[in-house]
Length: 361
Image (cartoon, rainbow, N blue to C red; front, top):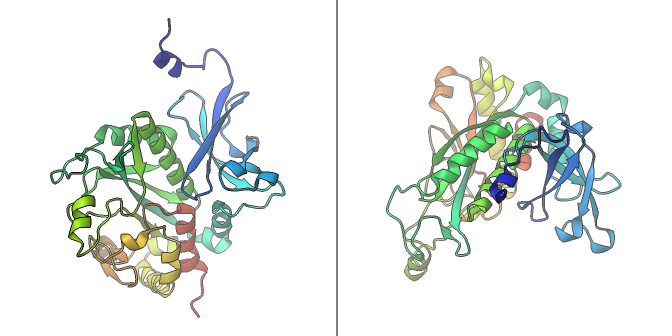
């Protein structure tokens, strides 16, 4: 008798040419990921060759019940690390039956920015540092922490989950470039990139999806909250209840460069771009994630949310420029403001729009 694990790991390649495609999309909160699977007659490696599909938008908060059909447009294909073989993950965005992007579809607007000839000419590169926290199921408390208590310093909890995610992303074709533990025990980071244009958003969303599937399998919860352990300055009882001291928040630092920044004389281009970013600071902050004010306090290597400043090798700045970039006179900069729950389509396209298309005059 076959075991359940045998059936889950069943290789269909020799039995049928058919494959399973898992369609993935972003739900009504703008942060929840949804998916459903369908059978296709054979392998597909071009999203344009995949059929559109639909779902009930009233169940995800994206359409009214009396007109609930939402259409999924396949946009990017990845190998499926869970079913393996020729099976695929498909990143989609969502439209009305008339072909209009629904309000929570941020990819469509981002794609328009990235397809602008002035942006395409600059070949924008992104490297996104996605921080996240692993929580114990049902109690909303970090993995490895004693319930209602606090861990010792520099403990690593959940390394098996982190390593499984790393390898699954590589298998899927996500350009994941590294992982590391963070200061707060139970908090980790993975990096996606360098990725060009809209692919940075596609890859980060799929990496998040894979992480959510792996934590589900392991009975753990992943949180992208920018300040998972709350802190109130001067409130001793609150801090004793919810956290021993002021723990680090979670961000999604976004490293960025254009062709002009990577060439000789690029440092001057970088400085002009940062000047533009400063002039639109409030607009960027408003789009950089929910609850970011709890994280950007001026502590724990952050700049205060109301202050814009940049510096070379300054991790307490809004934007950091690396020593190598300053020394070589070209390179990239790091926007340290985005929260861990930011939408990468919004953040990456907004940085490109501000630095390449926006005219400060």
